[in-house]
Image 1 (tube, protein in one colour):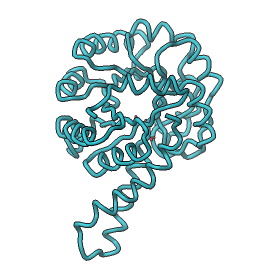
Image 2: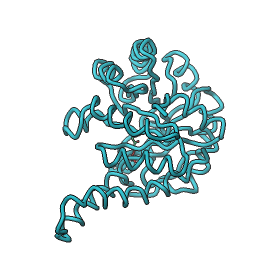
Image 3: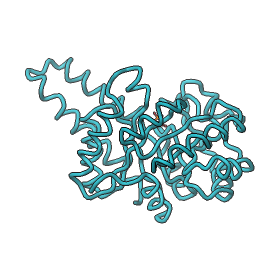
Image 4: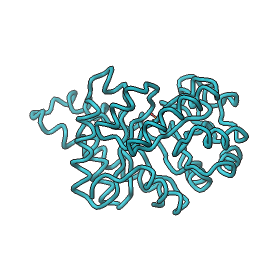
Length: 280
Ligand code: 13P
């Protein structure tokens, strides 16, 4: 089928009281692996691009990335969503939508709640006019290499603010800070499930969990039941990819051109275990 809207995938996840899994990718072998395993397990799945991987690191461009995801999605029956991850640049977001991203994140988590609402609302107005969904962030999911980011309750999402934030910002989904952080954790995270329940009770948009690498499965199972409908994973997926390349080169393989196939096989094994966490 063609690409599916991320909001539709999140509705499916909500009905099934579980989460769809969203993977950060940078290139074709990663994209191809995600689509292949999603089809094999029949798990509606979301593929995400970090703008900095295109804009600053030049791994790809939004247009090239969108075309690759669309090409692969067309070959399968399982719904595949395409999403632009963390972006706070209005013009970049609009350009990406025009290049095929039907779902985008406006990240205003560094701003005051009022400014975050104002900017998210502006992005949502423009994005909705072009038929795209907008994920917002309330509270701030920081970085796991600063241990305090995952445990600093000042950064956590406040349930009492969440309802009015979602209503006023017009977002289609909201990323919440309940004990996760981006990157490799120095200490095992401990999700604030009570807070997640309160946010879920207070809002009626799907909730998103960032910082998925390294969160124990038992905690995820509860979080998915208690309102998380989109679960983002990046670091551990990238790490496996680069580690595979490194091992391949150190082993002095006679044929460099076997690397993509080996990498895809390793990525696919990882993706199977991750996707099976979703009850979709
Ligand atoms: P990790 O890189 O920590 O898995 O987080 C991914 C993420 O939240 C992308 O938005």
